Image (cartoon, rainbow, N blue to C red; front, side, top):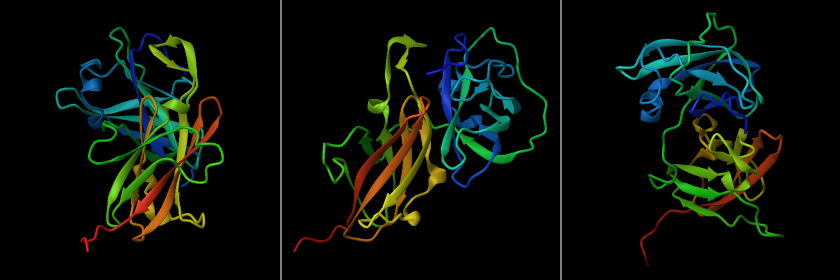
Length: 256
């Protein structure tokens, strides 16, 4: 785990959907979605302690627009970020909570591909969402140990807890024992013939929640049919991890 600077006390991952493929991107991050953890601890006047960084802790060029602490609104625009993967969901990092920090905003005209950066404030597992604890399957297993059931008409979320699979450190850094973190992720749903079911997923609805949760969306599916959801994660230590969950699509019928 690489922290931008020890003088900053808080940060949150910003999810960016690059499944469409792109080079450098200009991020637009809506701070209205950041929640009280951000607004109660950021500098009031102009957000001078805001910083943007990549997963390696390298600073990104940014500016702040439409700032209003009273209304808890504003946007952070990141200029021309060369993302680590151009065919997945990737993460940049928003830092704040440093009362002594001076402004570091830049003046620029965005020139890259516009992309939304999303800060997730949801709570995993609420609202009847499924949860997958990411770990190795049993030796020789052909099916995932995690089974999630849904109705064909349901549009629901699956939260993947990647924490058990991430490498740890012996001594905490910024109060974290993580040695590596999620850098990118992609997601697909396959049928029993291993054919991808593109109509059952929405990659633009993927979200990341610090320190190791990823949210995916699943919809539709044929009644009385089994599928497998597959999450592939790239880490900041250049590891590739793959996790699965069995999806059972069933209509509920009246008993006979």
